[in-house]
Image 1: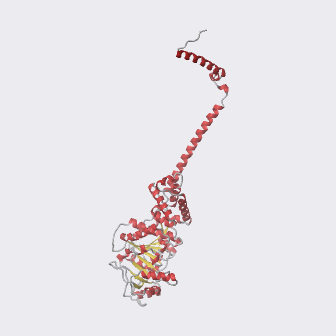
Image 2: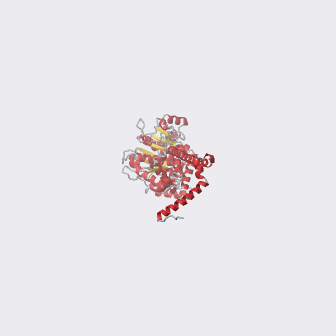
Image 3: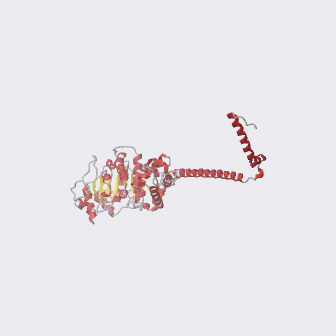
Length: 497
């Protein structure tokens, strides 16, 4: 677009090999970011590239159904030189922990890890380090942390009299910190969040599949049921990425990505993030490119994304920005400065473009940034809106994955092991207490028996030996015998009368 006119013969494209160099889709509310996601996802799927989409508002499910022709769609297709054809794309629908409509996606507490869990529980840096110590102990002792009750059981044990010595050599766990962690876990469960942790754990390689017709499978994570828990779903999306990073082999540069991952409402991921969390995100974004995975962050302004992460993004689609307040104007100027030099007056363009239009700069086939171009985007060929609830439910239950992940499994893990250990300890203490009590009772009974025996029961010998006359006789005899022995030893003779 130039001077308000759209030039259909000047097509703006992103080279397929460059889509694992990551990207940003930004713009004010209502400017068309979600439809841009849908549009890019359609074209990737058509090229055989699997796509992951987080559906925050519940309106991306329409990608599975053919679009509806209309005046606006026809006009847009004519403006941009598009041969529009209504097309649905192969989809799988997921839901975190099965809350909402979708195949349940669960993670074990162990695989989620202390850094991500600290973000969800809103712990500070000290508490996060203590949580890391707890995870380390559980791993060393073979205590599997599958769900939240496992974690609570380990924390409770480590603050008990029996468990306190376990961590003494490596810093210990303060009662105050343990209390904070336990309260955070209780509040988290009270919000119904315990369902996200457990087994069977979701295998993220399911996102890398293709449909039988060769098109890439679009995985849509339905999040409307938890959209009031932004820290939870944003952190869970980060777990999905981290799990993919850990599992995938190095492939370097590829002709097309193995997966393109769209991270909607990305600013929620970074709000209140600890230093360790931001470092983990930056490392994942930087290194996952060589695993063949591309990430697109979707948010309102580029400043929502930390600079270290933003520096890793090679492709950019910037929708309109608003400048109604001094803060908005400052954000606009900061956004303009992040673009390469351009013949456009970007401040004017970014406040003047309409819905479905954007300022675009991408990487060329050689990896160099292309010139900035104001662009009118193509119309999505799938349904621009949600499918009805019945169709969504049938799609979920008709999936081959539903039977694999639908029902939660609660196997023996840390909670069961520590509960059994506690029962054994209590049984041992009770047995010791009962033995001590029995011994004490036996001694008391023996003493009572000795004091209570009648005098007449004593033998004749005992009576004679114990009598006063017998004792006096013994003393007299002892004195006489002693005199005789003394005289004999010292050589004196007995006096005669």
